[in-house]
Amino acid sequence: MYTHPFSAPYWQDASRELRDLRKLLFAALMIALCIVLAQVPSVPLFGGAKVTWGFLARSVCAWICGPVLGLLFAFAEDILSFFLTGGGGYPFFPGYTLTTMLGVLTYALFFYRAPLRIWRVFCAKLLTNLQNVILGALWMAILNSSGAFSLQTWYASASLSAVKNLVMLPVQTVLLVLLFTALQPALRRAGLLPRQAARTAQP
Image (cartoon, rainbow, N blue to C red; front, side, top):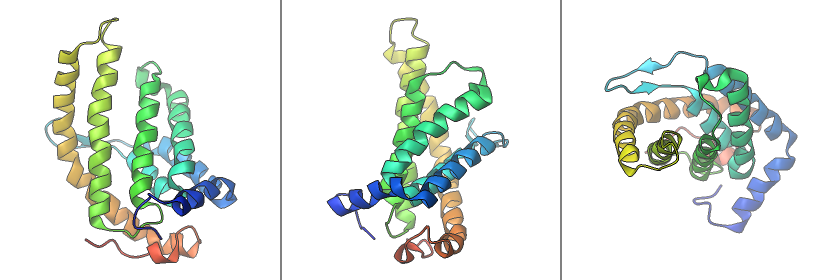
């Protein structure tokens, strides 16, 4: 158990996950689950916001596998998801792979071998949503720039995305807290979750 990720033992533990067959299999299972969840219809909220489901599997993988294996998972998941699902008709762009990897890394830094707290879940989701707003708008501006980046295009896209992500934030936080709480007993029995971390999320 660690209260923060800024220590050598934390990263040593995270690196050892690369040699743990159970964690590798778990990461592979989460990749498959992400691909399946991408086919599940999203739930519309308001203001154009909608809840999709892939973030649930990504956050659970980050929670169990940590930041090192989590980065490899995110890279593989994004690439495989794109080529297996066709990318929704959009061309492949590595910026979105980077966004996925950064998001999983953020989840891992808040959840891996850490005491589960509601504030941790909220902060992790807030940061990943900010990443989606800033980077997502940047990638859109680049893809639509026709060779000339437009700050105005970025700002317009970021403003719209910020509203949607703000609407989604409390819903996504609640979903993660409920999911983590429900999964803890099974993950503890499977030996995938350190005993100290297997507690109901608290404020």
